[in-house]
Length: 350
Image (cartoon, rainbow, N blue to C red):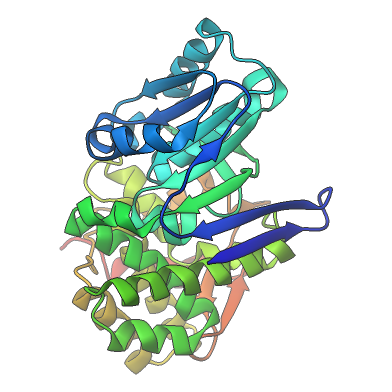
């Protein structure tokens, strides 16, 4: 299955998302595979058999969100300089969203930009993170605050990578698919609700429908000036959860699941979502082994963290919420602070 990306308002950028068993890929210049030890142990040997290039460098970086920082990017850059990579060289991101984001960001900077390819190995990166060209790293102020929009040359999604994925990582990917379904496609949401995702056919359907939704959004709005911002549903709250727990307690998809529950509570407070639908979403997340609760230590402190997020602008916070029912969306930038605080206090530790 091939799903095209066509970004007409930025130099007519085009590339394909290929959902299929991996096949031989030829390069006429140097290639570097950026990965981590966990992924390398499972998949590197297989990947090397499919990569045909004059020279292949393997760059392993530590595993974990806490290493998604500028120091790791500088390490990758240093290895590229040592190996004398040039502007015709290509980077391959072999891993999950962390590897993809860092590799893409590195590619955007090395000699002012070289090609990179995404080979996502987690469900989260296959349904979401590998598609659309968001790259970057975290710092002490927040998540992905240093980065660039930089599109890959191709995305190769091989479902076989999921055979070695831990169940917790798998669930984190389902959270991102649920996010897109709630925002854009109620039928897709019903598909997720009614299917056990333990069969290959159901998982491939989940990936394909998620990628088609994401591709359609990116084609319309590459740099998140409009509809693409809707994909941040659950992230405004979720990024604060990640930051307050130093990126070590929750996987990204788990934090997004918690963020969706919080966002839904705000939507209920504003009359944008019924309590029944908010409960239904919470149960769907729970049934897919995702966390749905977070004890906030201090609601006011949590609120102030919103302003460190990229989605705040001119002192206003953008909240992405369901709008009336599942499958519709709205971006609200004018919610009074006291309303948001009152919602956060419902999650405050007693």
